[in-house]
Length: 249
Image 1 (tube, rainbow, N blue to C red):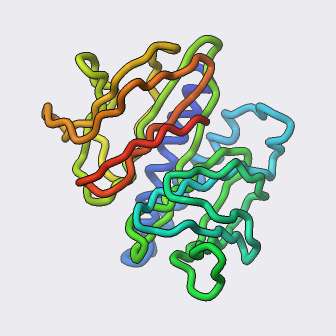
Image 2: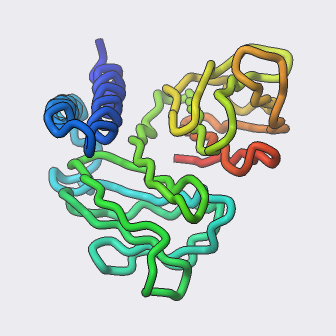
């Protein structure tokens, strides 16, 4: 088995245990700790399995970018531990990667230009040598952060894509090539699918359907994935006005 496949498996497990740990955070401290330990063990395995790809990704740095996926939230400024790191990030926009030392952070998000009442204030634990996308999701009065791992590396000539369901009230969905294969099955809100390989450099129309049905809720016409690249398709917006954002990694 390749390091890369190991890495993906560890990343999935780590993410799963992280979700479980968060789920039990306030209701069952013992379970919270147990899942947190498991999360941490898999993160260590993941770090061990990922060789240091670039010198910039030294042991105690991570790469973090922020994706604004809250349809009714204004443009925002993002602060990490009280320092402004991003300014005027608009809905559907994704920031560049920021290099951050690893450890625990407080992330505060304010409407642009304000510093009095944050629309979100949350602690996030960043582990070494990884790339994260942190999506701000939900409605502006119930904003949450959803961190997920990025793995942009592809074999030469190949392309891979994954799907992130970031639309709070929308049902679970399937994503299919129009008149062709289903690429992602039954992805629920707050889930990010595994990556799949797709044919590079060809135009295709994608459909987002209510899971298990032919009911198309969103069409994404003329999508073209370039070779040697990795993509995330994010579905955002209200169920009545779903939108797809194509993010290049």
